[in-house]
Image: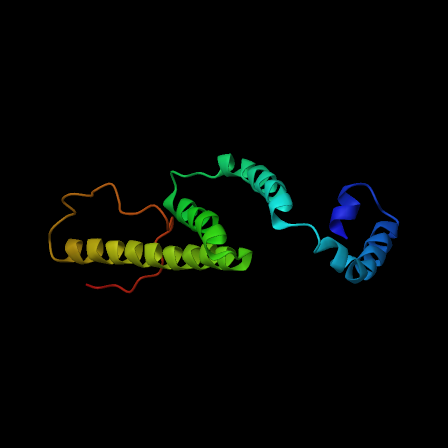
Length: 142
């Protein structure tokens, strides 16, 4: 697997050992279930703490990145489901991106319409949202 290669295993022996250990794991389930949840909770808190260190690299000034990251971080523990948290983050990323793109397109179309009617842009002369860099092929309104 990629994790084995990353740690230095290049012969495939890491994958074979991992497969053998997974084959042995069903026999160990009754023994593992003897461990009470109170004993494993501190380990899970420690793992969660270690997983929070990459958050400092998230640009929270950019709403397009900050909101999906925040939703993923919040929904995962509240729903008791990693997949629900990841889905919330990915879905919000695409929905937010689509809404911002539509808002930017509407802003550009409104600016063109305003120019056609003889007026200029009065309040936001510097341009609208910065999420779409190039002028898309919008139909001419005049």
